[in-house]
Length: 279
Image 1: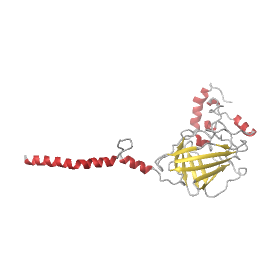
Image 2: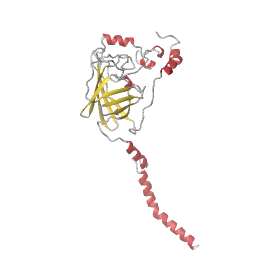
Image 3: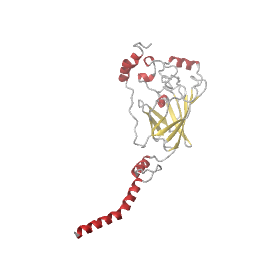
């Protein structure tokens, strides 16, 4: 009986002694939050671990932003006679001149490469930047289009002498904390956007990328294409956000598969056009 009472007293005393320590440990694990609630410190530690170390010259990572088109918020410059002829020959399924999907000649509807910068403006799609010693590789989520931006000091080729490429020829260099890209030699079969605005092989794109903080990129783009437009096309600033955790997040594999697209055309787009044959 005495032993049982003694054990009870000792157990009660131990509870009284350890209770403050237990509460302190619980509070240490979870910690207070700004909302008055307790957030697990394990979560705080995990978020801190995924936050990349800020280096303004490190553009690597998976980036996503609210992208629509180059002319978002700005006016498309007047077109030359050649540019207007190209524009009128295109039949987009989006924008003010949209036709029924069954009648579009949009390259995207036939799984042709979208090129640059159009692949940058596919809604809700991300891209990845892989930074290497001699170049930056840009991989787009849609169709895994790949663009190489050389940083080894080479010059751009004369577009009159070079074979045009879907993603053009691009070179980049650092100007302080701004990464400057110049590119040319784009295949003019690729539209510059989903509304059918044209581009020529001799056009030049100038881009300035800034990396103001660890998880943000800002892009300003100017298209100078005298064959297509009477003055340079200056786009609005685009903002992209890094998808965390850095080095772990992956872009999706979203290929445009010709067989699937053909089946979709036969079963959806063409019937939506009244089973008519596109001219």
